[in-house]
Length: 181
Image (tube, rainbow, N blue to C red):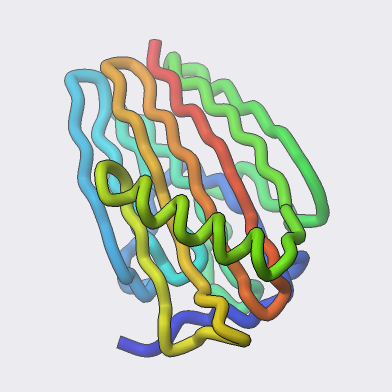
């Protein structure tokens, strides 16, 4: 598998929300999880220091995609797309009883805070979530990584992501809620 693209400028990354599933062939998937409750199913992919989360409930599918600018994505089913230019919140209500909310922030760090955050999140990930680091792409002793923490409740899915970019000593943090009535 090829190395992930982790030296992309954070402000060039895009957040995308689709009302459809996306084909796995579009992405390099470094880790994945499948979740199932009575109300929904979810597929979570770590795609480098980016991610894809697809949630299915009945005939509804929502896919959240954070990706690099050169990532090929379809136009069909695209609800929203924007760049990571600062803190942002977004809400989406679908007519079939599915609500979605997300917010994210970009945090510029000192190298010491970056290292400590890396250690803390990796330690936390031993008990939950998905943690993927990319040692071969470290810069100045700092490793790029992606941590996705999730909590699957009966009618809700909570997703927290942390994507770390050592060349910019920056972390993107997202928090998403998929709510099923």
